[in-house]
Amino acid sequence: MLHQRLLVVIGSALLLAGCAGLEEGGGQRSDLVLSSLAQIGRPYVYGAEAPGEGFDCSGLTYYAHSRAGLAIPRTAAAQHKAAKRVRRSRLRPGDLVFFKTGPSSYHVGLMVDDGRFVHASTSRKQVLVSKLDTPYWRSHFIGAGTFIR
Image 1 (tube, rainbow, N blue to C red):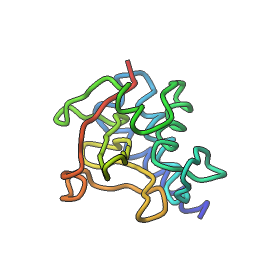
Image 2 (cartoon, rainbow, N blue to C red):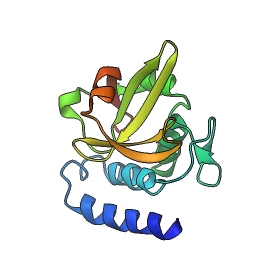
Image 3 (cartoon, rainbow, N blue to C red):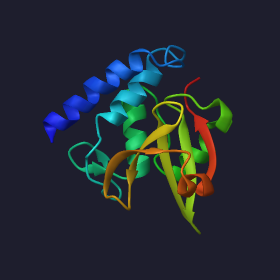
Image 4 (cartoon, rainbow, N blue to C red):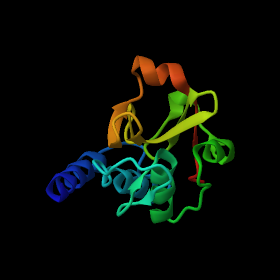
């Protein structure tokens, strides 16, 4: 498991070295993406926000932002409300994407590149990367935002 995470982080660092959009916002965009990607495979645990415990969706984004020196609200709904809005067509690595997955359920992920986001999946019970442009995520998408100023 540790070996797998190390390979993901190294591969991600190489991939991100050439990604457009990471240079603006200081190192915060790359810090956000790398901190999130380093958690791939960690278990989904409701209310958790640390590598040793696992993560829920907003716990992962909360953790990544804290590692990048940014203070954000803890829950997905509060993050959605407080984030500076970003148009879907203008998404960049490190931006947050928000979904409404039930009557009072929200989900959040962090963009890795122009089409993928990392998130703590309740259905897959772990942190993983998904494509934003799948029918499920497209139909539940409610907005995007950033805390990078």
